[in-house]
Image (cartoon, rainbow, N blue to C red):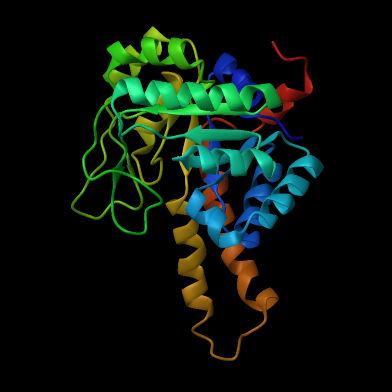
Length: 291
């Protein structure tokens, strides 16, 4: 069941749960995420960063589209952290149903201008748009994106941005970072800031850098208005740590001998996130008329 982000998150926003956006950059991750989502009867977002898209090539999107169309659960295929009109148009042309334009490091007026332009290009072809206010931190070179310094979302800018751009969903900066946190760095979400932002606008909000955050804070963020949470490092770490164990056997060389335990390890993490976000079983809501 292929949907855009607007229709996918409308239900999550009404029923106050969050949908995981799992970054996929291989057929193994794609298959594992889809299996976990169907096992949990959960809607899912297949997120692909431009760097990942460059690696897997645009032909990979056809495989994701086929998985989505055949799936028993709702699926959105989303460009994560698009930073230029060229990346946005490439994603739209090869079948993404949702795009993110990340102009968060620009001055507010410039962020509004490019985000509004993306909306003008995407909405006529039924592609939804995510914008971002504030910046997400980074934990190191293996993270997909992020800034050295977190700039928290200014609630006073939120209404202006949403009304001026007509984005379908908004990524907010409340203290997260992309990647796996080192032992000396502890994430802490500013839930009071999230509450204030959610009181200003009635659209689904997005939490980037959702890996390795305290469970109680994530659960609270969902109840306060977060409807999409990005997960990349957690599933990839589980997958590749298991790969390292399996490849300790120098005889193994066939993919069907190496990868099934790795997929099982990442699926365990994916299922756990689905449960934490209160998305398990929520695919049933999409089999009724949209509210």
